[in-house]
Amino acid sequence: MKNYLAFIEREFNEKFETLIGMMQEQLNNKEVREQAISEAREQQCWIVDFKAKLDNTLAI
Image (cartoon, rainbow, N blue to C red; front, side, top):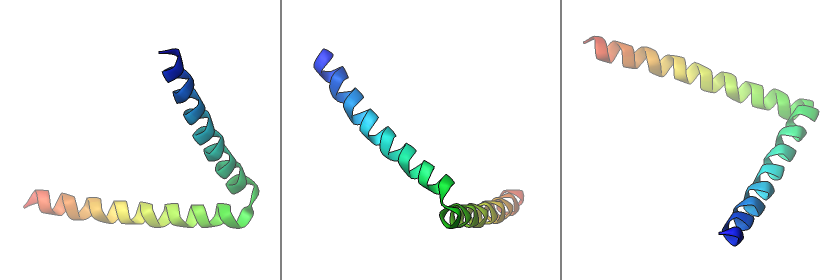
């Protein structure tokens, strides 16, 4: 059990550190941050459009 927990902790820590590094880079890099914001806005528009279509379909 200890070996399993140690393995899981190593794997989690490695992935977590990678994710934190990527997020830190995005926060520090204005171009990357602006691109991420742009992509998020596009996704938000798609979600709103999809929801409207879904609402129309369910209303029928």
